Length: 198
Image 1 (cartoon, rainbow, N blue to C red):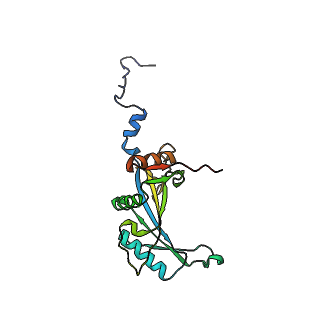
Image 2: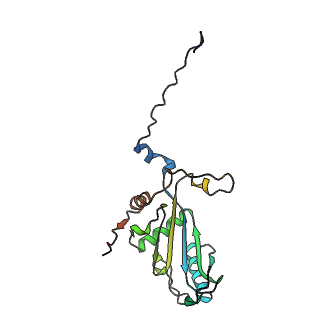
Image 3: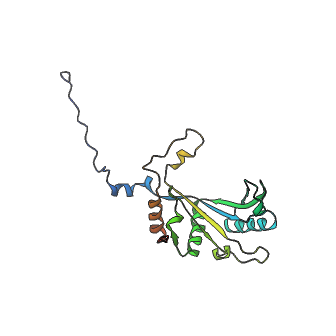
């Protein structure tokens, strides 16, 4: 019941706020961007070849690469457990976009549907690192390179921060289709059709 002398105040409706699809696309928080780019060269053995591969990544990124160790002993490959067999580097920011642009140029901006994961990330490989514009050095040789791109949206950090971790809502997460659409729009990329298995 409303007491005498007290009027009910009507709350004015907020104008211009809609939950339509067009406004969702304009929302800054929905913008897809590159969180990080992971570059990997797997040599399969420790020693001089691995050291030369590390030099390739250092030339490309200007960062100090990190060595990866084997998890298991595989006798057929001649790999021992905890032996350094690969080298990788993580790049962020404008430098990541620049290197990714070079990598996609080598692939002629063509990717398969299988290159994209269900979590909205994608990866591909190139056969020769000199295609990226690095001058050929006979003392180093030629190495192949794996690219893996992790995409995200503003607010994804809540799941990765050290204190008071949160969960990214299902509607805010990236899907495979959204990642493919972003690739096509940003780089005018081509998604190649999958080969039907006979």
